[in-house]
Length: 417
Image 1 (tube, rainbow, N blue to C red):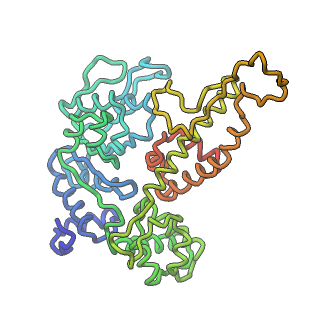
Image 2 (cartoon, rainbow, N blue to C red):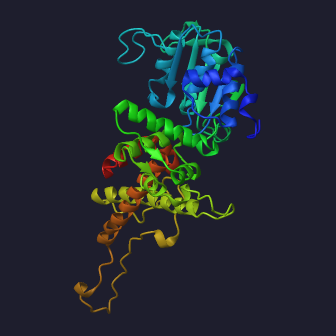
Image 3 (cartoon, one colour):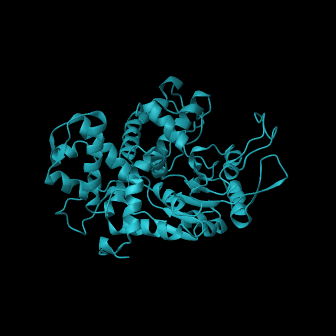
C-alpha cells in the first residue's frame, strides 16, 4: 500500500481500533499495519510484529486478541528479554516440585495460564536456542513439557511475537532457528519508524504535551512552526518513546512557553547527523558511520587495556595487549605494546649496569596513562548511544556490540544513570 493511500479508503474498523487502543497518527503505513492486524485477527495464525524499538509494537497483539474469537480468554504479554536464561523455560512452560533448587512447589507456566487465549512474546529473538526448540513444538503440535516432568501437556493458544531484530540475519548467524522463524512469521506486520510517519510527529508531540499539562496541572506549551519542522526532520532513533521523553522534559522546564526551534534543539541529543534540515541536499554525505566505527574500536581497546591492567596487578607480564589466546585478530603493530628483551652483556662492555637503560621491564606508567583519554571517549560514546536510543539500554548495548550487563556496569561506573 503506497504512502499516497487516502485515509478514507481504510475501513471504519481502523479508526475504531485507533481510538480504542489510543493509537495516534494518520500515516498510511501505520493505518495499513492496523488494518492488517484487524484482518488477520479472526484467523488463528501466528503473527510476527516487526519494527524498531519504541515504535509501539505492543499495541498490535492487543488489537489481534481483541478482534479474534479468543477475546474473552486470557491475554498474557511476556518480555522474553527481561527473563534470565536459566528461568525462561520455567516461566513459559511451568515446572514440577523439586525440578531445580528453589522449586518448592509445582507451578503453571504462561502457556498453561493462557490456555484458550493469546500469548504475546515480546523480544522473541532473545530466547535461548533450547527454548526456541520447545516453542517450535508448541507451535507445531500444541504440546510441551513442564521443567522436571515427563508428562506431555497440551495447550490451545495463539502466539503473537514481536522483535526489533533482523530475524533473517539472526537465522543466518545461527542465533535463531530457521524453522521457528517460518512458523512465527506466517503473517508479518511491520510498524513504521516515527521518522517515516510525516506529520504524525506533530500530532504525537501535541498529544503528549496536552496529556502532561493535564496530568500535572501545569501550563500547556505550544510549538511554533520552526519547532514543528525541526521535529518532523529529526530522525528520532528512539521513535515514539523518545519523542514522549523529550516533550515531557520540555513541558516541565518550559511550562506555558512557546517552543521555538532553538529551544527544542537544546533538549535533543547533540548528534548532528540525527537532524536533517529541510534545506539539506538529498545526497549529502555523513561521516557518522565512520565515527561510530572509530569509537567502537576505542571501546574495545579500553576493555583490553582494563584486562591488561588486571594482569599487571597480578604480576603477569604479557608480551602485548592483544594476544592470540582468545583467537582474536591482532591490531596493527603500531597499537601493540611489546616487552623489550634484554641483550646479553658483551665481555668487553665496561659500562656500568646503572648507566644502561632498563630493558627487562615494561614502562607501565605509559600504559596506565592511556586509559584516562579512553575513559573520556568511552563515557562520551555510551552517553551518546543512550541519547540516540532514547535511554533504551538494550538498544544501546546492541549498538555498542556489548552485553546489557556490561553496559549497566559502565553506566554505574561513569554515573550516567
